[in-house]
Image (cartoon, rainbow, N blue to C red):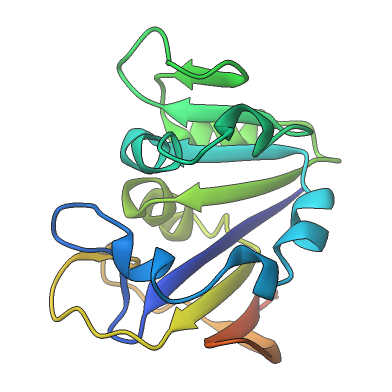
Amino acid sequence: MSVFFYGCITMDGYLADKNHNLDWLYQTGDIEETDYESFYKSMDITIMGKRTFNEIEKIENIGSFYPTTKNYVFTHDERLSVKGFIPIHCDIVEFVKQIEKDKNIWIVGGNTIVAPLLENDMIDNMIIQIAPVLLGSGIPLFSQKEALKRFYLKEVKKHGQFAELIYAQLQKF
Protein backbone atom coordinates (compact mmCIF):
# COMPACT_ATOMS: atom_id res chain seq x y z
CA MET A 1 0.00 0.00 0.00
CA SER A 2 1.19 3.48 -0.82
CA VAL A 3 -0.46 6.62 0.47
CA PHE A 4 -0.14 9.72 -1.70
CA PHE A 5 -1.00 13.34 -1.14
CA TYR A 6 -1.53 14.95 -4.55
CA GLY A 7 -2.70 18.52 -4.67
CA CYS A 8 -2.04 22.14 -5.41
CA ILE A 9 -1.11 24.94 -3.03
CA THR A 10 -0.32 28.62 -3.36
CA MET A 11 3.26 29.86 -3.13
CA ASP A 12 2.57 30.77 0.50
CA GLY A 13 1.37 27.24 1.30
CA TYR A 14 -2.43 27.45 1.25
CA LEU A 15 -4.82 24.80 -0.07
CA ALA A 16 -7.76 27.19 -0.15
CA ASP A 17 -8.61 30.75 0.77
CA LYS A 18 -9.98 31.58 4.23
CA ASN A 19 -13.52 30.77 2.99
CA HIS A 20 -12.38 27.35 1.69
CA ASN A 21 -12.70 28.53 -1.94
CA LEU A 22 -10.45 27.43 -4.78
CA ASP A 23 -11.18 30.22 -7.23
CA TRP A 24 -7.48 31.17 -7.21
CA LEU A 25 -6.69 27.66 -8.53
CA TYR A 26 -9.34 27.59 -11.26
CA GLN A 27 -8.13 30.98 -12.51
CA THR A 28 -4.50 29.82 -12.70
CA GLY A 29 -4.54 26.84 -15.06
CA ASP A 30 -6.15 23.64 -16.25
CA ILE A 31 -5.89 20.08 -15.02
CA GLU A 32 -5.04 19.09 -18.60
CA GLU A 33 -1.70 20.88 -18.14
CA THR A 34 -0.65 18.40 -15.42
CA ASP A 35 0.08 14.68 -15.06
CA TYR A 36 -3.25 14.21 -13.26
CA GLU A 37 -4.61 11.62 -15.69
CA SER A 38 -1.64 9.24 -15.41
CA PHE A 39 -1.52 9.76 -11.63
CA TYR A 40 -5.23 9.00 -11.24
CA LYS A 41 -4.95 5.80 -13.31
CA SER A 42 -2.54 4.41 -10.71
CA MET A 43 -4.93 5.02 -7.76
CA ASP A 44 -7.40 2.55 -6.25
CA ILE A 45 -8.93 4.69 -3.48
CA THR A 46 -9.52 8.40 -2.87
CA ILE A 47 -9.99 9.88 0.58
CA MET A 48 -11.10 13.43 1.24
CA GLY A 49 -12.71 15.58 3.89
CA LYS A 50 -16.19 17.05 3.61
CA ARG A 51 -14.98 20.56 2.76
CA THR A 52 -12.89 19.17 -0.10
CA PHE A 53 -15.89 17.17 -1.26
CA ASN A 54 -18.06 20.30 -1.11
CA GLU A 55 -15.64 22.08 -3.44
CA ILE A 56 -15.29 19.11 -5.80
CA GLU A 57 -19.07 18.69 -5.84
CA LYS A 58 -19.30 21.99 -7.76
CA ILE A 59 -17.44 20.52 -10.73
CA GLU A 60 -19.58 19.74 -13.76
CA ASN A 61 -20.09 15.96 -14.23
CA ILE A 62 -18.57 15.22 -10.82
CA GLY A 63 -19.97 11.68 -10.96
CA SER A 64 -17.52 10.91 -13.77
CA PHE A 65 -14.57 12.75 -12.20
CA TYR A 66 -13.40 9.78 -10.09
CA PRO A 67 -14.89 6.85 -12.06
CA THR A 68 -12.43 4.03 -11.32
CA THR A 69 -11.61 4.58 -7.65
CA LYS A 70 -13.48 3.80 -4.48
CA ASN A 71 -14.15 7.28 -3.07
CA TYR A 72 -14.45 7.95 0.67
CA VAL A 73 -15.52 11.24 2.24
CA PHE A 74 -14.89 11.79 5.94
CA THR A 75 -18.06 13.45 7.18
CA HIS A 76 -20.76 13.30 9.84
CA ASP A 77 -23.35 13.17 7.05
CA GLU A 78 -24.97 9.81 6.42
CA ARG A 79 -25.61 10.54 2.73
CA LEU A 80 -23.82 12.50 0.05
CA SER A 81 -25.38 14.26 -2.92
CA VAL A 82 -23.17 12.54 -5.50
CA LYS A 83 -23.35 8.86 -6.37
CA GLY A 84 -20.05 7.00 -6.09
CA PHE A 85 -18.87 8.79 -2.94
CA ILE A 86 -19.08 6.90 0.35
CA PRO A 87 -19.57 8.86 3.58
CA ILE A 88 -17.49 7.59 6.46
CA HIS A 89 -17.12 8.68 10.07
CA CYS A 90 -14.22 7.12 11.98
CA ASP A 91 -10.56 7.69 12.81
CA ILE A 92 -8.62 8.34 9.58
CA VAL A 93 -5.48 6.57 10.83
CA GLU A 94 -7.36 3.40 11.80
CA PHE A 95 -9.31 3.49 8.54
CA VAL A 96 -6.17 3.67 6.39
CA LYS A 97 -4.48 0.92 8.42
CA GLN A 98 -7.28 -1.52 7.54
CA ILE A 99 -7.07 -0.95 3.75
CA GLU A 100 -5.63 -3.84 1.74
CA LYS A 101 -1.85 -3.63 1.37
CA ASP A 102 -1.91 -3.76 -2.45
CA LYS A 103 -3.96 -0.54 -2.84
CA ASN A 104 -2.76 2.94 -3.78
CA ILE A 105 -4.53 5.65 -1.80
CA TRP A 106 -4.85 9.27 -2.85
CA ILE A 107 -5.43 11.75 -0.05
CA VAL A 108 -7.25 14.45 -2.03
CA GLY A 109 -7.47 16.96 0.85
CA GLY A 110 -7.58 18.69 3.28
CA ASN A 111 -5.37 19.36 6.22
CA THR A 112 -7.60 17.62 8.82
CA ILE A 113 -7.07 14.39 6.84
CA VAL A 114 -3.39 15.02 6.00
CA ALA A 115 -2.25 16.06 9.51
CA PRO A 116 -3.01 12.82 11.43
CA LEU A 117 -1.56 10.72 8.61
CA LEU A 118 1.66 12.78 8.67
CA GLU A 119 1.79 12.55 12.46
CA ASN A 120 1.69 8.76 12.12
CA ASP A 121 4.22 8.61 9.23
CA MET A 122 1.58 7.20 6.89
CA ILE A 123 2.03 9.44 3.84
CA ASP A 124 4.56 7.78 1.58
CA ASN A 125 4.56 10.25 -1.31
CA MET A 126 3.68 13.89 -1.77
CA ILE A 127 3.07 15.40 -5.16
CA ILE A 128 2.65 19.10 -4.55
CA GLN A 129 1.88 21.50 -7.34
CA ILE A 130 2.59 25.13 -6.57
CA ALA A 131 0.51 27.82 -8.24
CA PRO A 132 2.01 31.29 -8.80
CA VAL A 133 -0.44 32.85 -6.36
CA LEU A 134 -0.07 34.48 -2.94
CA LEU A 135 -3.17 34.58 -0.73
CA GLY A 136 -1.69 35.98 2.48
CA SER A 137 -4.06 33.85 4.55
CA GLY A 138 -6.21 30.79 4.10
CA ILE A 139 -6.32 27.07 4.83
CA PRO A 140 -2.76 25.71 5.10
CA LEU A 141 -1.72 22.34 3.73
CA PHE A 142 0.34 21.49 6.79
CA SER A 143 -1.17 21.73 10.26
CA GLN A 144 0.18 18.61 11.96
CA LYS A 145 1.75 18.70 15.42
CA GLU A 146 5.25 20.05 15.59
CA ALA A 147 7.65 17.24 14.69
CA LEU A 148 10.46 16.81 12.24
CA LYS A 149 9.34 14.88 9.14
CA ARG A 150 11.79 14.25 6.33
CA PHE A 151 11.06 13.54 2.71
CA TYR A 152 13.41 13.45 -0.23
CA LEU A 153 12.89 15.21 -3.53
CA LYS A 154 12.50 12.70 -6.37
CA GLU A 155 11.59 15.01 -9.23
CA VAL A 156 10.64 18.55 -10.23
CA LYS A 157 8.32 19.22 -13.19
CA LYS A 158 6.79 22.27 -14.83
CA HIS A 159 3.18 22.14 -16.03
CA GLY A 160 2.05 25.43 -17.54
CA GLN A 161 2.07 27.89 -14.63
CA PHE A 162 2.48 25.12 -12.03
CA ALA A 163 5.70 23.83 -10.48
CA GLU A 164 5.34 20.21 -9.37
CA LEU A 165 7.49 18.79 -6.59
CA ILE A 166 7.49 15.02 -6.13
CA TYR A 167 8.64 13.83 -2.72
CA ALA A 168 8.93 10.42 -1.07
CA GLN A 169 9.17 9.70 2.63
CA LEU A 170 12.63 8.78 3.85
CA GLN A 171 12.71 5.17 4.93
CA LYS A 172 13.14 4.49 8.62
CA PHE A 173 16.07 2.34 9.66
